[in-house]
Length: 127
Image (cartoon, rainbow, N blue to C red; front, side, top):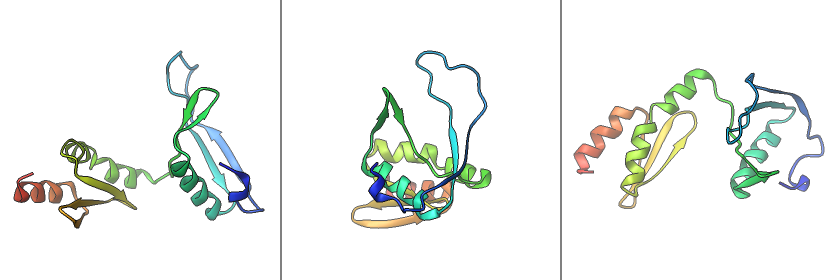
């Protein structure tokens, strides 16, 4: 990602792997959680990961995600099926923090905080 992009005080305060058994061939590697000293370094890692995607290390693709609270993860996960439906219809969308779906349709941007609101809008628009 290029060390020149990070602060001179870049420090990993702690890091650990999520418990799991031995990796079988073809199975995804385990998750590693890291706590960084500076939030600006975390933000830069996430930004550079998007810019440099895909990132491979010794033949394994690395993915970077912010660690959200369980409640936030559940809210974000509640949009999964709707995101699949939007993708099938080639409608642009993004999930914004903490759990707000942004949909761009016919040049207009719409924001939804609940999956049912998106479904109601899709029905109203005939999508």
